[in-house]
Length: 598
Image 1 (cartoon, rainbow, N blue to C red):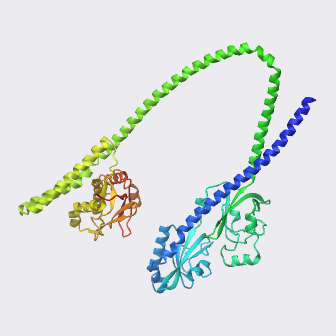
Image 2 (cartoon, one colour):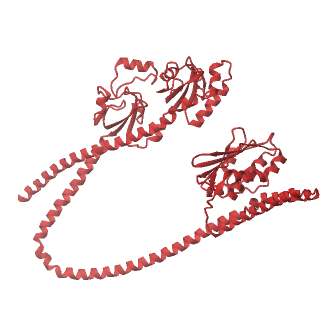
């Protein structure tokens, strides 16, 4: 009887404690979900603001391009050029569509002019972003595309001609970028306008439904504007206004495919500039799962505690019996101690073996590093012939020229050629010295070099080849105050290699041209070298820097590989792209040295 009463009391106390634990866990989990949801929604809002701000000023900048005035002022103007210009802008800026609208709202040119649902010829006078821009303001607006039926955010700006507005330039941004920004699969999100209409959501069934019931006048106004097509704008909740909905910690959402409402923890973030609100929804069902786990864990803990107390009670009753076992326990302790000593000895031997293994591993790693270094040296050694071929050829040209000049007794010119031969000889010596340095130890080769001096030196070595092949050199005046963190000899060697490749590419070109352009920013310097030759296809551009890949019948395929490694050693980059006027364009990017020359 006494045991039955104690058991009943234990069960009642356990139930009461489980109820208390469940309530506390529910409150804690709900608070945690709300705080995490607020943080995630705010991060999404900040990222989305940053993405939209990237495009907000672009229409105003593009509107100042004088090439937009011709189709607006001349009805007979060939608009194919304007379509291609807008297509190039859209590709460069990553915009969905860029289009030009005249004063009446008709689209004259668009970047999607070749697509079946092209905007060209469509009239958008009914769009608010057009009305804002045609009145001299910068427009912003979200809507479904009238032609494409595709969601987008629109930025617009007026196009002025002599102080008067002649048209509107508009950029449409595809809001699929939200999917790239949002990274939380366990949380639903929705983006709604100031009326509470959802136009973007992770839950497809919520699209173009309102968070609150809308009056018929407002629904008619929204539908007539075609902002969301012909959506019925049915409500997801029955709250009276958005403020009441936002103030609820937990809201019930009725989905079109569900008979019963689902409860969510709700958090919101206002995007004042776009006029939107971002809502995050976390199912409250997750809190119930945590509550169940907490109750289960406490029940197990409570049961174990009761068992422990019972065991303790039984222990008190068996102390006399335990006293009789003391002798046996002492013998057991002695045995266990002996085993422990043996185990410790084995552990020390294991540690010593581990230390020996570590030393052997370290030695093996050192040998592997040296083997890799020697393998790289072998690869570079194979390219010595290619590296020194150009200065040796130039030395031979100067020598042959000097022999002819001696016959004509033009000793001053001969002396000048000898000076150039000495310089070329020193260049060969410097090239060979670099391989010796590589074999001995690694070196960053960080020096201050005037970029213009190395470019002029490279042109000077190749001037005769340029003249002989009839190549026109396009180059602006090079500034002498731009310094780079690079070795002068190695940098000059890269320029010579790129120019030599360009000269060879122009062997069969009509009116061959090579261009050099030196650009400087606050922290970087860019050198552009282009030609108007046949250029490179996509496959060649992918493999052009691969060792032993060449487009020449007698080439080794190592020049561009070595050039890229030289530039990489200076913390720079060497890339290739298509030149806008045809041919190939190589771009060298190097860190700029801000220290002044002494």
